[in-house]
Length: 88
Image 1: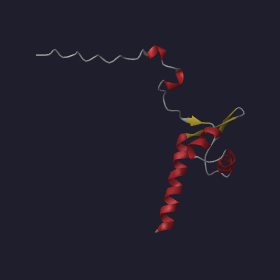
Image 2 (image 1 turned 60 degrees about the vertical axis):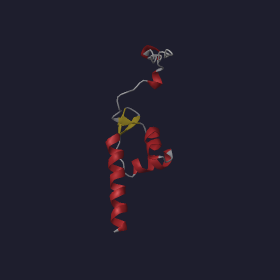
Image 3 (image 1 turned 180 degrees about the vertical axis):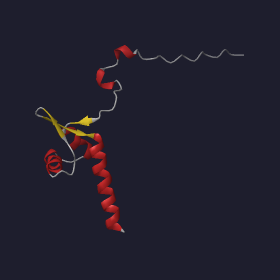
Image 4 (image 1 turned 90 degrees about the vertical axis):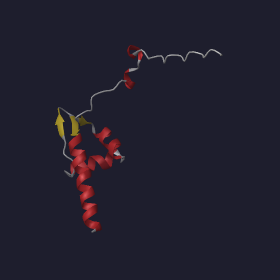
């Protein structure tokens, strides 16, 4: 009877050598206006207009503006509810 080849054991990557951008991070509670625009897949100016019209809540820390992720989620929920109500 022929002898079977042993299946190689999978090599585990050394986590100490994983680049920082690939390491999992905790989800952020706040984002910058640029990041918020990327989340909604819209332009920075359009996103900033939503902030200035108070459709998306934001706050400042010094001169830096931050947007809670929950504010973006609430904006999406309102837009979906408006679209649903318009369709009915």
